[in-house]
Image (cartoon, rainbow, N blue to C red):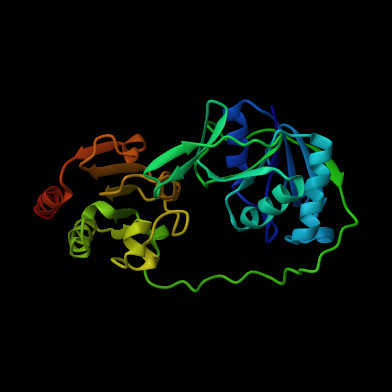
Length: 305
């Protein structure tokens, strides 16, 4: 099996998702090559062939040009799978490539089992394996779903590529959302509320525990979507990525999007009524309890210390 890994480059920097791609290739046991529109000065740690297009000539993003470069690289590598990150770059480019190849595309892959990609369904409560009928499969990988066991290593063999293709779209820059409210990335302790808190009034007990620990409270996406907490408190791929010394997950099942935003925390405590909740796989301590009863008692004990 062969894979072509499509790396990303933004504002002069190689994006970290490249190592999710490498971890995926290692998991499936595939021979892999990599594609990048970037620069010689910022190369991935990758022991394989890197097909490198010059970012100065091709732009950090030009969909027509980048699509043609990927297609030409596919012609050289002849991969079974073309693998993108599930990012704005991947969301836009992967379907263009899949359409040109008349290939099946599977988005937001979180695992690979029995030779098939696995995707979340029913708001990540269930997972399903997907079989694709086309000869080549185009995939996008959910951030954080695949991780290297060791630090990335290796020096790529660089093969320069180019194309005469042109495009009508010009990238003029990036516009970032204004930052406001709490910055969870600077908190050493975070206590986060998930859907399991039951109702918006119970945010108060989570916030009280965070205060007793001299930390901040956060929230999962369902809690933010329900408008029980502000968006600036959201942890996960569509919120903030955090790595506090202590992370307490309250009523959070452990969807891959949330885990990707907090799994680098130094110590993780999960409070959940379900002993088999996915959050338990990353937690250092799993407390199987009704959080509405457990958290107030814990808060009281901490404040009495």
